[in-house]
Length: 250
Image (cartoon, rainbow, N blue to C red; front, side):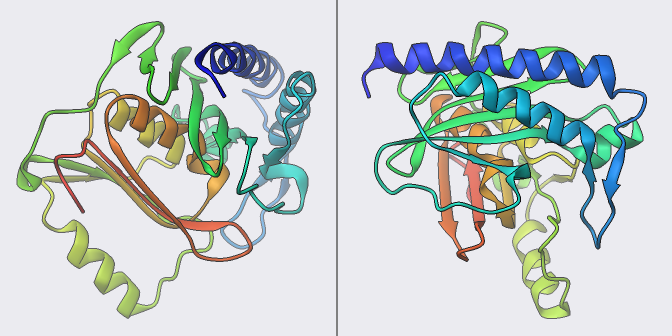
């Protein structure tokens, strides 16, 4: 895809995110209407309504879509463009009134990030970026942090629904993260990655996370000059993901 076509798709994603944000804030801020509380997962009518609206907007595009609330996990195409949608990242935060949640829309090309849009629902901040063309916060350029010492760096992470809590796995996790100055867990992978892209934090790492949680944020980080590593673990769509400013490693 050329630069002009990516700009057009970015505008489409921004419009879809804005429409979803409007209905989420208008109809669901006071009650997300929880429909499922199984295990460590949470599903709401807010997620489904926002997703339907986003998919309606994206239907004008010829590309296939991978989305969270569809009920199945279609395979990410190895070739060509594909939309990846998380209509409400940070659902638990949204349902509990904790102000860290967002709409997340990405376009990947040949199974790699091409563009991302993350719309902060509480502060109405729009993060957007195209890999190779730059990353922006409300239209203003943003870049990853210049911190180059792990001991001075902040790591963002999380424990997704499918994460193992076995003692051995947790011990390995602790051995990785203990070298950082601070650890942050805010309940939204997309917002965590947006903070890496804008230089607030240096590294984001999460294991067994679904692609829709991180697809847009990874595009933002790469577009802002950072480095991303995303390795698929299972046919169900879980990934190990690390995104950084390119100067601090996990």
